[in-house]
Every structure is written in C-alpha cells, then in structure tokens.
View 1 (cartoon, rainbow, N blue to C red):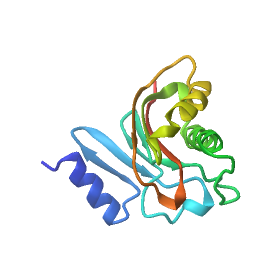
View 2: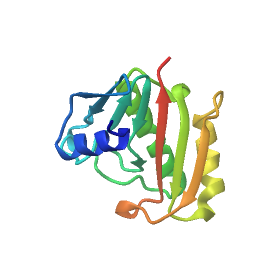
View 3: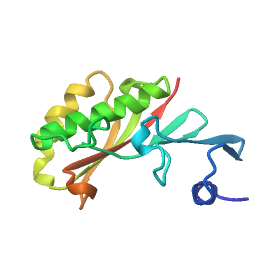
Length: 150
C-alpha cells in the first residue's frame, strides 16, 4: 500500500488536481484562487478528509505582488490576511486552524510577530511551532497552517 507521502509526491509530480484515495480518505489538491499563483508548482491547499493543509504564506500582497512594507509586524499581518483569504475559499476561518508552523528569518522578531499573531488568534489557540530559517523572496516570516472543517 502506498504511503500518503508517495501519493502526495506522485500526484504533485504528475499534476493531478483531482482526488486520490488512501486508507479510505480522499485527497484533493486545490490550486490557488489567486490568478498570479495558478501555475505554481504546488497546491495552495491539500485536503485529506476534513483536514486542510495550507501552503506556507509569506507577507506578499497577492493583489499587488509586492511584499508588505513596515517590517515584521506588517509582514505578519499580511501573512495572516493571506491565510484568511485561502481559508475563506474553502469555507473555513482562523477559528478552524488547529496547527501553525511559524518560520522567522530572524528569531529576534519573535515577540513582535507574536504581538500581531495574538490579535488574529484570540479565542482559539492552535498548537504552534516556531523556528528561524532562510526564507524565499527576502521574507521575514512564513506561516503554514492545518485547519479542520467541522
């Protein structure tokens, strides 16, 4: 039996956007609702049953194609707005998020990021992992989330 990772990898390599079945769960690969991201070599969301795995978002405004200006606070705000937009396309909200992975270009930005983050996640506090790494496009932050549809 193929592992879920094998199915995901093969589906992405061969451009499968329809569904696959693994262990009685359908897997859907959803392309982006954003015109500028429709030809990206990855899915915006991978759905397995009622779980939605969102691709990491950086602080780029998808309408303008430009990175948010104003440092980590502005980028964090834009990242979370981008996540809200993707979730909305699947009839989800931030209240449906169960796990966040936050990647910072500079771990010293943790407290500033956290101040913005806690304005978006008020009532529900998803599990979270935060670490620092080099990011694409000069981004200061990237966040990926997993959401569960009730």
